[in-house]
Amino acid sequence: MDLRREAVRLRDELQRVLHVAARIRWGGFGELTVTVDGRPVFSNREARRKPEPGEVARLVQSAR
Image (cartoon, rainbow, N blue to C red):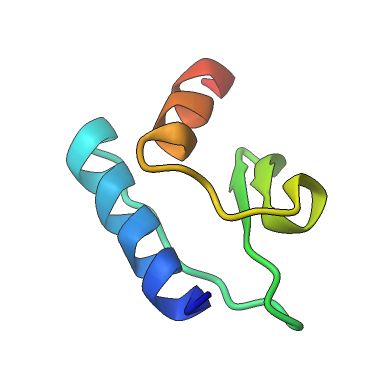
């Protein structure tokens, strides 16, 4: 998986769908974690997969 490409896709999706200012913060070892107000809403490490298109936007909406 190209993690940088996936992170940029997620950032763009959140900005387009939810109109939020999303930022990319690089972690180590290929980990991708999306947080809202300091709480994780998706982690590829815990899920053991990359997020499906639209999945993170739905998770962020439900976390608000």
